[in-house]
Length: 429
Image 1 (tube, rainbow, N blue to C red):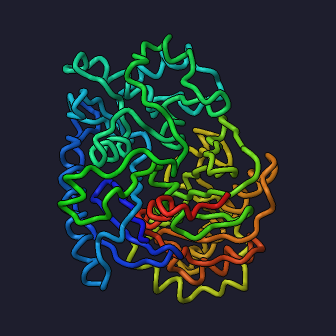
Image 2 (image 1 turned 60 degrees about the horizontal axis):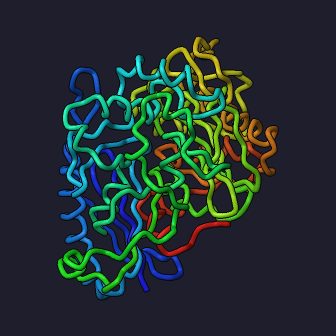
């Protein structure tokens, strides 16, 4: 038995196939053109996603053969997509217009309506809300023909099966899904959401339907291969990293600093952007800081960092007490939209300055995990690292000293592997 994961990213589609033990068997990738920004709103024709998925699955079937495996050994499939990207489709799953992307702006009017009706604790509030995007889509041309409101992963799964109107708890959370009641909340009605468009919601990994017969024949995957409810790209990346026990954390050191912690308890603090997704019987809690690699690039060119990092002695702290930010404003672990970066005094030696910045980001990371613990999260057991910062050994040693737990590289950094693990049922909890 093999399991296939499909990751729909911003720049392309990736697939990964794993065996029943979780070992990577083969992978494929197809690039996509970037979304367009029209009237200030980031949007994309969903046909771009499907064309890339179609091409990637063909490439994946060929990659399986090259690896010595029959494509018909694939018996389970899961899809992850960018969190918050949403579209409207008709009864035949044809989009009635472009999808609004996860980073779509210009929805202040919709956000104001949501703020009047949604409870203060929901993460569905704000101009980045998926609810705000759905409100905008409902007001657009073609909306009268709509039958389904679908997230990116939902629509791809629907195209794979021919079964529309199904989502998963992880994607549905930002659309207002009430995990406690297992229902769409009444305040969506007050915001003008057409309840008939809202999908049925299943837990990630639950069966949706078999792969459509024509696609089974085209790609050669196992007859009756099941397509399961998917997840978001960030949760798929967490699963790919190899976190599998309560207390495991995953830190993504990209432009920003994102942490996630596997917990037995649900942890929420909306004021700081802390919220939890359910993973079977466990919870995945996390938050995102504006610190991270972007704060380094505010002072150094990326090409300078390797040579400067090689001059750092991680075991001799600088004593500098920095809070690096690329620009004013912080979300987590401190919620302060006006918070200024603190990166002074600046030493004459650039290597020392860089070390101070790396120590400062490590301190933000430690403070973030401490914030989750203070809200009832488990003691931190280990941290797996993804993102560009994972390749910096000096930074890893600085972080391990500050976090006081083992810091390791993520087992896999490709979210498609995490989606494949979801399809295979290799999910903690």
